[in-house]
Image (cartoon, rainbow, N blue to C red; front, side, top):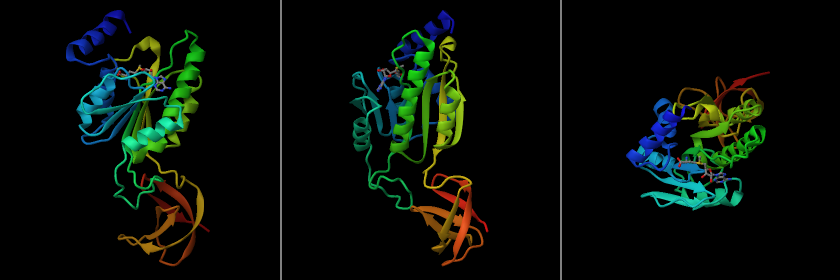
Length: 268
Ligand SMILES: C[S@@+](CC[C@H](N)C(=O)[O-])C[C@H]1O[C@@H](n2cnc3c(N)ncnc32)[C@H](O)[C@@H]1O
């Protein structure tokens, strides 16, 4: 990005009371993808000094938790944690902060008693060494940790946004994100410095992981749905099977996966 543009967002952040220029990247991502909605519980990984936290709080008005290895100066209505996002202990501390009673017994959250976050965002970056391939690899490593955190913290259907530095490991990372979410896009907001080649990956609608597209299962129909489809459960995950009746044992192939249920087609 030309120096004058960089200074433009720097001055804008200062004038509007944001702690970082990065605040405008989150605003631009949200304008395009509406990743944060009113009332959402948001977890921000790699959040210092707190520009994204300020924007997340404005957008959601709900519970917002920020994590960084560096301390984050207090922000009204935002919880902060000093911790490394690569460590399981940190994920446990975050989980405690966002815990709410689980009112959705049909959802296969795998974390009974916790409903989790609606959105996990991550702008974390390694300290730059100057060696592009090394920095790229460390950025992918951090983004992968963030993806794993998101998998543990999000409600089914939740959303994820993460920054990565582009390079040869990027396509594999994108593929990994596709294994977690129904829809995945990459996006460069205008407020990103072009020469840094940073890009944001946006994953929408977390899959539960209980069933996978095109996989085959043998299930027993336990009930009938309102639309006349049979209902089976795979690890507590609801699968609708057209034309199957209660008590039948059927072989199915998964044809469509949504965050909270799937459709299976009879085979054989
Ligand atoms: C670009 S800054 C984030 C800016 C922030 N989005 C804002 O608007 O203020 C990247 C942050 O990632 C943090 N970070 C890097 N590695 C981390 C890790 N393993 N765990 C937690 N935070 C990390 C750094 O300390 C740094 O504060």
